[in-house]
Image 1 (cartoon, rainbow, N blue to C red):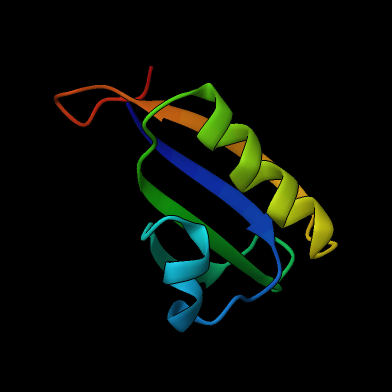
Image 2: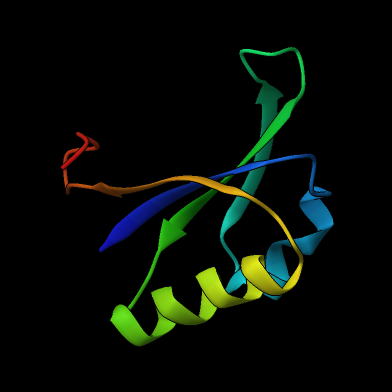
Length: 75
């Protein structure tokens, strides 16, 4: 499955390797702050849990965890 995980704050794209090679991108949030999105395949729930735990350990606020279907639609 493919997921998009949004967190509050800016994470440098070079951190992609620390998150199982997920694509790391940033955009402006509603409040003018920075939102970072991690997008990519996640092989199983244990891997997803590991990614979420790593974000928690970095003290990043998780805004959304979105599953993306095979055609790119949100599930």
